[in-house]
Amino acid sequence: MAATGSGVVAGFARSKLAVGLAIAVALVLAAVAAVFLLDLRAGGRTVTAHFTRTVGIYPGSDVRILGVKVGEIEEVVPRGKTVRVTMNYSTEYQVPVDVKAIVVPPSLVSDRYIQLAPVYKGGRELANHATLSKSRTVVPLELDEVYSSLDELGRALGPEGANSTGELSRLLKTERKNLEGNGEQLGKTLSDFSKALDTLASGRKDLFGSISNLQKFTKVLADSDKEVRRFNSKLASVSKQLSAERDELSGALRSLAKALGHVTKFVRDNRKELVKNVDLLTDVTSSLVKQQSALIDVLDFAPVGASNLALSYNPRSGTIDARDTLMGPYDPASFVCSLMVHVLPTDDIPQACFDLAQRLHDGGAQLTPELGKLLGLSVPTPGPKGGSDKKKGPLPSGESQSSDPTFGGILGGSR
Image (cartoon, rainbow, N blue to C red; front, side, top):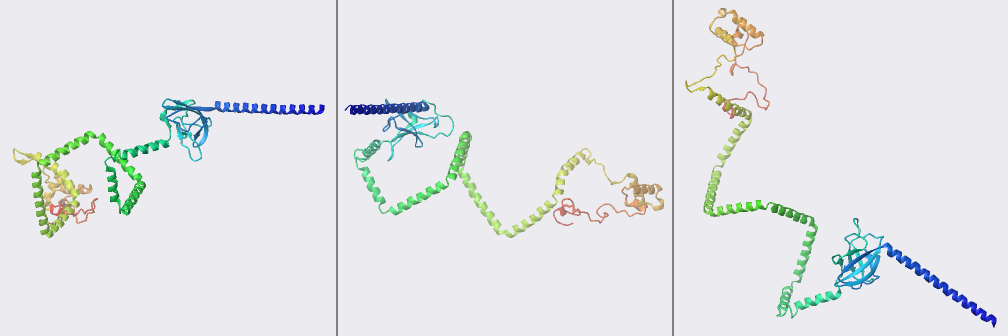
């Protein structure tokens, strides 16, 4: 009996020790969890947002970025016409300073949560303990609001609204009659409209480019508003003047029409003669083109020559006071000796003329035919008839130097 009592006491002592150990382990685990939660809370960031309503949002609901949980709701407090929601998220995630808080409605497998958007892509981050105003929060449209809007629409179109006198019913009946039997055409119209939209979509770059250019053109017109107004004013003045003189303008146009008729008849009746004259005119213009350098020289020197002629005229005596060149390019001694050769026999010509001719010949100077005769030389007579028959080379312009310099030669004729 004594042995049995001692065993019971020992078993009771062991069970009491096990319970104590279990309680101690639970306390340790609770302390660790508390410390972990405190560390998590201390290491997170807090954001306060003001919503117009928070249906289905409670403390402990998720806070997500791109659908990934980054924190949770701490507090939901009504504040008049808004609801203040305090939430936290982990410091591992960056949130842009222009972030918005969006209440996402539930899908088939999830509850409502708050989404922070847009995603951080660089720049400034949202500060800790930041506050988002009502303009930076978004709530979904509730089902009862949809029903309420549909109810309002039904009332507006019903017997108490637009159809109070039956106008809407008559409109629907008329449209039914118009569309009855036209389903195929309506379907084709919709198909063509779809193709047109596809065409616009494929050419959207050109379309937007045209719109951009139109915008630039409009801006230029706006910047030039004064000039445009002035142009419109002058155009209005011209239109007014033409309107006042419309009778004279009509008469002028009628006369012009008659004149054009006469010209047409003249051209038709004299077609051959006109063609012949145009061909001859072509020859004249071709000659003028060939002699353009000579014409340029005439136009360059003719004014100077006319001016010199005017200056050389003596109005008192009625004569032209100009220096003559009767001796040509020869000096007086050569001129006198040449005259002696013409009138005197060779034996009577002074020796000085022979010596002059010899000196000029030795010096390479130009001799007259008479002085050349004294030396027994054959000197060609200067001028067109006595000149050399040697053909001259072409001018730099390509035309021959032997062309006829007279006006008849310029026009393509002959002497």
